[in-house]
Length: 264
Length: 262
Image (tube, rainbow over all chains, first blue to last red; front, top):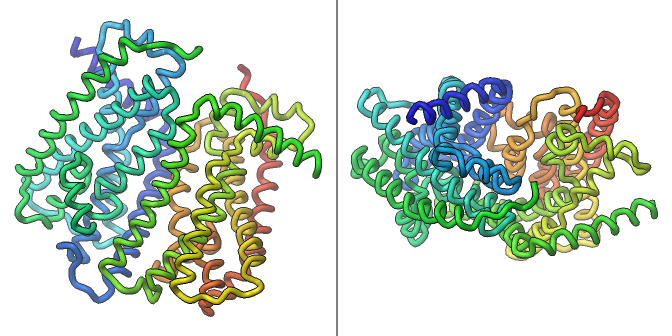
């Protein structure tokens, strides 16, 4: 049984490999994104030393690390699920002897592993050549970062699966998916580190799961957050991973009972 | 011309009918559009909580540029939407249907994808220009409104040119091109004062992917920023050039279309 799930990872990895050409332009665009963010922050800092607890050089590293982490954890599971629902192929997948959601997560992992090796690592190398990115030298920080990155992937994918399954209830969830993408990019701290938001807003964001995707791992990795250590962040990530399983479980159960196929 | 306008209104009517089937989604789309725009505004506001000027531009000026940026972007997304072109028209072979009809093929594709909710963004953009322009005490000249119209049309032409060129690539390559979604990332950078970037990015945003001409340059005209006035006046020229390139590569590409064989 476990073999079957392992195959989902492997097959998705190989499928992605077939379309790897797209990813070379992707690396270029991500570098450009990092570049533009870098110059914007440089202009914001001006002569200033530190903003929201970030020095200018920590901010550079934060921007690069956050974008590259996104290169790993990003996937389109929400779109895949809602397409399965709309063209009706989900009915077949429901009666197959595996758990649909788990299979999707495995496919996402296969995609993530592809992105990690052919997108994130070369992209990071290019970003380090172009911009003054300072990575930690402590192997423990690296090991911790990889584990946190894995949890970023899990939490982001859970949110994606939840958004995708909602297509059962709203029929056309195009707008919902776009809204989710905007919210995740903004509230996860990818565009603006959460400590720079006004107090009331960062207070709200601290009790939402999104910060566990980008902000917390990025902060620890750049050595900015002194008080919140690796273990603390891991604790928060595990907490959200567990909490998000609850809506996932109920949505999945409700979806199986509600299934109706719109054509196809 | 009357023929084309007639087609446009027919398609809009059709659009309303399909849209009323998914009524809730219509509003979700408008809201998610606005939310997307709001993130960029939030970014500007958060930045200016920590600094007084961005390379010599004040908060109201940057917000004004963003307001202008939203206007042509809304017009573009309403009338020129090629997001799924490759999937829908080439992979599924719908291009065959388009080519057998009398109206111009590119025009038909634009029509089939009209997206009126996007225009809400343009209205909000005008509102933002109004508010920040008032805060700045900008003069309202006789040429203000004609200039907004001309610059909006020019900027829309630049968008159309760039995206038509990129979409034409799908006639040459079989693999779905991932370039277009990524381009949507880059275009937003044209709204910041381009002078903050290093030389390479400035050249890129001015001459190669001229997204600075859909935001900061034309807006500088209204802001009375003399260092960019020349660039602002160049906007219609850039619009004509890039639209020309787009139409040219498109017509070359269409000739290569052979059908998907499904």
